[in-house]
Image 1 (cartoon, helix red, strand yellow):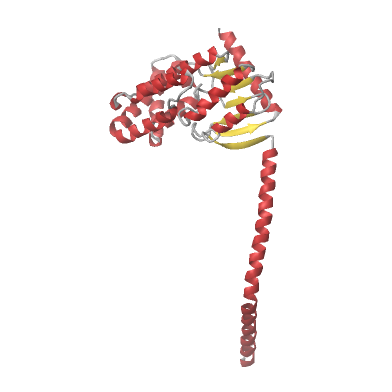
Image 2 (cartoon, rainbow, N blue to C red; image 1 turned 45 degrees about the vertical axis):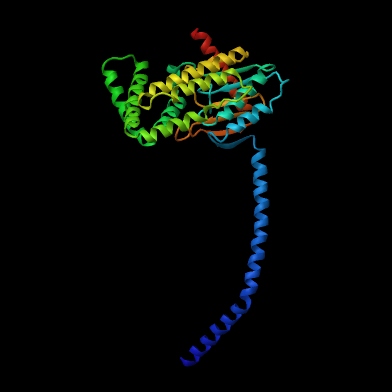
Length: 324
């Protein structure tokens, strides 16, 4: 037994000395290995980026991060091409509450292109149509109300819908009326109980909308005047209905300006499943995420998607003509 103990002690002692001698070399080898792998990883990342850039369809971020990509798409659009530029958006002032300068750039790019290219924009024309679309309605609710109020809003809305159905209210009006009443109730509670947070939210959303500068289109001045009218109202008098009214006024201003510049506007009467901007060669499109304001953006050169956008527009135009 003693001999076995002596042998084991000698073995482990020799092993420890060997590790002690080799450990500096092992450390150096680890560093060399690390830098070698880092270099390989860098090459791998470069290769993956190259592959991602070459894909016909790729992810480009979450709203409002991709607003500048819309301007890139419009800026690189050929003036001589005959393909029409197609836009689907829930509102004509898309992105204006989040990045006023990006919105201005989009308008300026569209006006420049309108001199030689046919531009068609499908959008919600009136506040009643806007309320039908999930994107616009929920973006407004998410932007102007607290996230903590949204579950209460949905519950109140359902209760009102049940009540209105029992009164035989027109089915198409049930949701719109219940949504309006529910929003006004919770908006008033928020406004009256959390005045400081409410005022901060109002200014945060409206201030980026537009800042007057020289040589801008008169339409931008009109938007600025509309914004100031609401910013200057006494805090306790601002209602949720005011927000829809303001959006309608801004929509009317942009619509008048676009029509004067020969841009064709097509009213949307049905649910808008995605926003998109197509120049005939490339399309940027976005789907709503968990929250409507968190739209997920993609850009594509896929001919099937480009064709789908054109088919979708033709369907909207034909539907609009049938209604008239």
